[in-house]
Picture 1: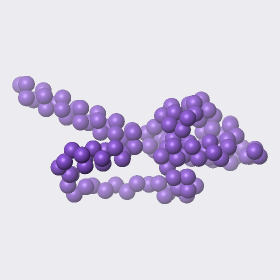
Picture 2 (picture 1 turned 180 degrees about the vertical axis):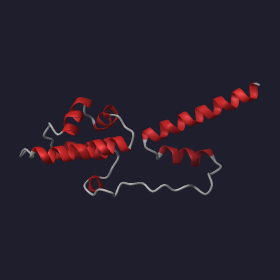
Picture 3 (picture 1 turned 90 degrees about the vertical axis):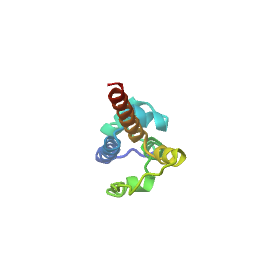
Picture 4 (picture 1 turned 120 degrees about the vertical axis):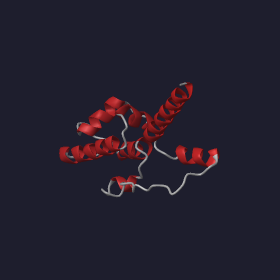
Length: 126
């Protein structure tokens, strides 16, 4: 493996970090999903670690859930905000839609549902 120059490593590390932050993920989450340690990812994000292409691919695809091609094309990963016209009525369809969301969004949704349920219970008990 040929070592990359420091500026290239820093640009790659910054891109990884920006995508991780954009997805509201921790270094532990991304590194764990890709099979690495958070310390190793931290070194990569700072540009202080040379990395094999296979490692970069694992971090991008498995860790961040982004296509490897899109990683190298800035602006292609912006998700348009689309408001659904109506929600499906059956639990199976809703469950399938939720399961397709990134982990962090699923957690936020679960927190929101828990808050709504708690507020409803409080209102009913009055």
